[in-house]
Length: 179
Picture (cartoon, rainbow, N blue to C red):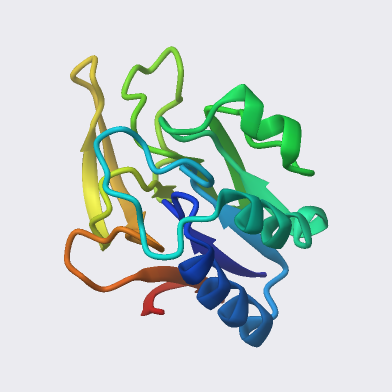
């Protein structure tokens, strides 16, 4: 199974176009979108090439191959124009026995998002900071889920470190990539 994993496009047609080029080059089985797709949010400056209508048109071409979750800047009106479900708080993807819990990362409550699977991966966005590390995860109730792969692909359009990015999963491995 091959996945392209991206988060925090925030309506940038410029950076979404770069991501679409990488998706075409990578030819993944599934594109995983970890939220904040169309709107830039009140705390963010407008990203380069801000054009949500162009972004939704690009993303809709992938509709048959997308697993998406809702970010804190996503709204019901976004679902009205996107041709794939994107309002779930989380999704689970399995590659054989390896499970990946996908969420945006803004909902820490265990009644909204379950604990990541032990020995699996937590895929999240929200922070705009890349991460690809094995960690023990402390849940809000104080319990610990041992050794979970934590993967944040960074941000497609508004990265905190200045490098616009996404991730690729293949053959049990995650790799961060710059656009």
